[in-house]
Image (tube, rainbow, N blue to C red):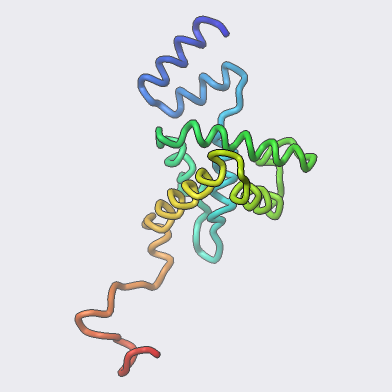
Length: 159
């Protein structure tokens, strides 16, 4: 590793810039988890019928920016890439939709340390971010709780 790469990596870690980290990893020849994280987000929350995909909202970038998940994400993406390689594919990103679902199901069922909690944490963080996004909220016809006026379109409470 060249001295400039080490200094750039230390600076990126000190200042926490995601773009800087991606440039440093690219300079070092290592794959960043960004494309795989976007594929994970889109597999969990693909969007349909007026709903945007999770990566279109940039949710994978938000999750990658969470410092407490960085190490787990790298470990999890490596696990998913190994799973894809065992299926004869270059990496998780290269899997088709059913393959990605199977990989995430296998990761959730895995007994390997840290993999199942990571899938659960990603589902929780991505789900919270996805359903809190204004673009997704607008897609639902929810106007608020029925109180204090009751149910506007029923005379009686729904059964």
